[in-house]
Length: 454
Image 1 (cartoon, one colour):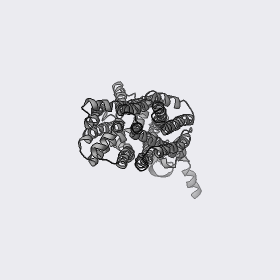
Image 2 (cartoon, helix red, strand yellow; image 1 turned 120 degrees about the horizontal axis):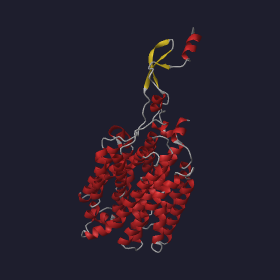
Image 3 (tube, rainbow, N blue to C red; image 1 turned 90 degrees about the vertical axis):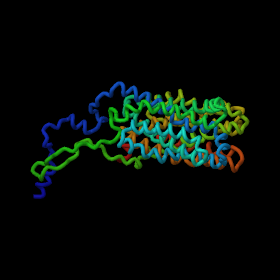
Image 4 (tube, rainbow, N blue to C red; image 1 turned 90 degrees about the horizontal axis):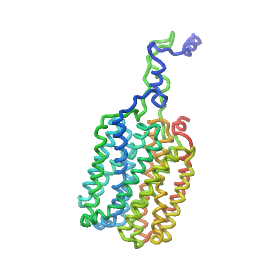
């Protein structure tokens, strides 16, 4: 009898619904398996492109505008060097804490709605932080703006993968280019704008709220629009089935149900997270302290701001080119090495002759900072599905920003206690070596789904 039952159990499971077809099976397997997906509306696609560009423009001015006026803010609020270092560590802290919430918020409200709310938070934070009159209030306003930046940081690669699955490289390049443009513009014009407004640093910082307010508008019509594809894993629909000759009707998942992705089992995910963290460390040290390094070397404040702008503006053309090149290579390691070598040369120049070769060091460090668009591109390449990209983006960015928190703070402490920039620059050089190593590992041709399933 047991042998007969075992034999019955191994028979083919047949659906009691005679209308279940192969197309239904494909649909259950998700859009990545070739199911037909309705074409998105033209107006929605155009709004998404505009929204991506305007949002990207607002993802760094809150940081680089502060870097250009850090000395004035320190004097105005009575900050010490260590406290200023803490201030420059707030961005990665907020990105780590709030970025991990982005996928859950996107599942509940939709990615467009979350990004829209993020732009509102940036606008509000930038508007109120200069006028709080205290260091605690300034930190709170900054945290509000950075919360909006954090969720948008995580969801931008998801939106690109979801709306433009066949143009990940070019759209990531466009997004990264706009991000670099906003970063460099804030660094370049914050000091002149402040001077034009009577030298009031509060007004010079608050003016960037207007750009953030403009970024809210294209997302408003998309608040309820979930896009052509879901960013979240869809459970395959259950099919009512009966095993021939055995038992009552029972639920059996349709074939093709995606397995649960345990992202922490993937070595590539960890390598990408560490790479993201180390490049973020370098970027936030640069944005927060590079202008001050030049000013301490005798460079005028306006010129120091322009030098920081040059560093940031290098990302405008390269952020468009690097993702397109990266998507055409099976291994992104050579790009990682090239960017790292530029960083080492730039830091060596800052150590040996910060004022004499200032423009060259600014260019080299700008090239090195293009590890950020490369990391974003690898997030899109190291996962097969939209759901995988959402998980990998949240994991890599949240973990990475946690890793990057001590860097800017440690630079402030070393600067205050050593009385110079020798030790901080030596720290930057030392961190570039492991960044190159883990970047090579993250650039290998594999996906997190494959590794997590092993």
